[in-house]
Image (cartoon, rainbow, N blue to C red; front, side, top):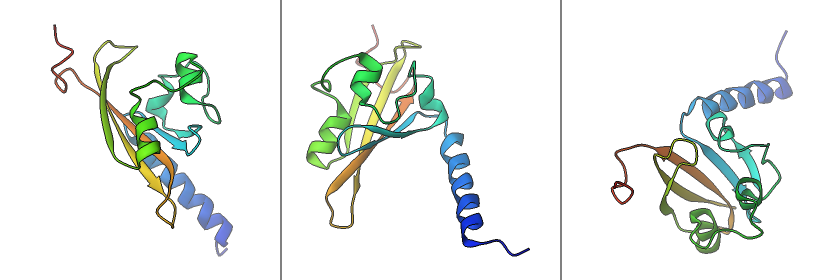
Length: 128
């Protein structure tokens, strides 16, 4: 049997899902309005409930607005890559956050990708 275009598209989507979930660093994809549209398996452990379709700051922190220094918010506003450091709420290890803009074909920001890296040796400012 010859696979149809739909079957090939589904197989390709599954391959991409496997790659996305194979990454051990948490990855969160946001739309322009700060809604979470996708998270990988590693990011799921940072949320109590499924954040998809909801604002990260409300789901994660129960805040009404984004944090002032939130790198994702800054990337959505400026279209620039941002870097930030926080302490992981789970492990209390430093967590390096990097956010990258997602552009539409007109080069307008249509979302952002946040990637976290938990490591005891990345930032020095958290060491006491």
